[in-house]
Image (cartoon, rainbow, N blue to C red):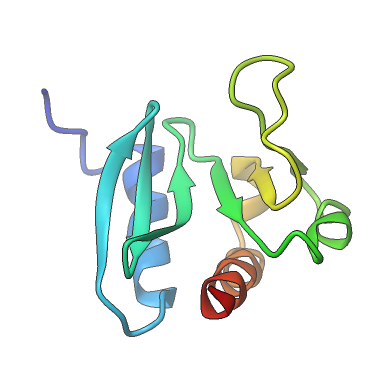
Length: 114
């Protein structure tokens, strides 16, 4: 497998996310064409090659979070919804640090419940 260039959209996003994660063991895992960040062996987020983000959130917060700019229901293939608690955020919606922080906070709130 060829290493991903350091300046790719996904690597850049990962580098911005890592300092925002809770102070717990974390690791990167490649799965289903994305690079997932696992916190304490549970997926928190996954970064797509285009710099978009798959975020795992509390299903109770799902409808409210889907109202954020760039947020859509995550799909595992065209037309196959991943269901409540799985949101994909477009890369342009993650350009600002406050927006990214908000999504990471939503993911870590869910992790804290598990």
